[in-house]
Length: 258
Image (cartoon, rainbow, N blue to C red; front, top):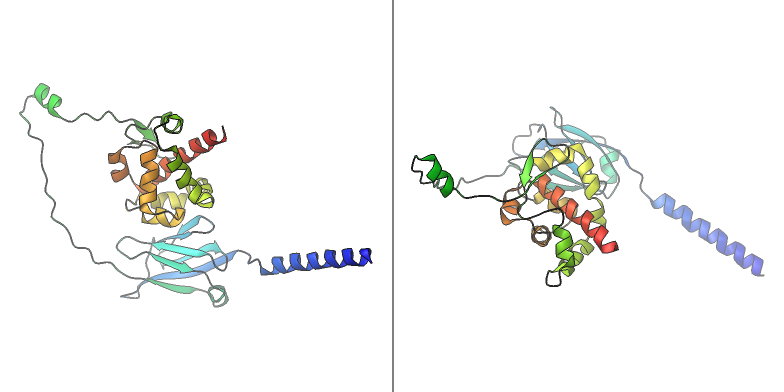
């Protein structure tokens, strides 16, 4: 009797395992076309990111693109001057061939900009002393031949944050622990050239919030707690912000294990 029960449980387990494999949706190559919702014309160089698999691509001259995706994945489309779109992947998108996705143009109103020049005397020695001095550290990103300003952030800054009694180390723990799966995707984001190129041209944090599934306030809190300067947080592009968060997270993981 015991043997019969054991055999039944084994067969039942195999049945469940087989059902799970059937339910798992395999990744396929998805083809689609991006157009202007107002004119119907194709849009070239639209950035397309699979938020689930953290891979990206761009549209060609005909507005077409292909990307690896599975049913229930989410595609994030971004193009300058157009409203970003999040598109869920469905079975019909694979079944009926090329899917058309329309983006809507944004209307921008230019604000008045007041330029306040430095009051220079014409004497170099005096003017140099009157100019503001920036003592911030300069950091580079692998793959880019330029550096960026990171305020008081130094290689040991995170160590000081986590090691000091009065510093909010728990805040970092809460922020990083809130989205562990998204934090693990940081390295994948940095390795995809299309995503890097997109982030290098962005300054609004919109794409980052979609990739990391964090609020803009959370991103700012992470950088504040990692001792990045206010000027860096406000002026850095999204790729620089991604690199800063990644660096902080890697140091945090090492120190947290200790």
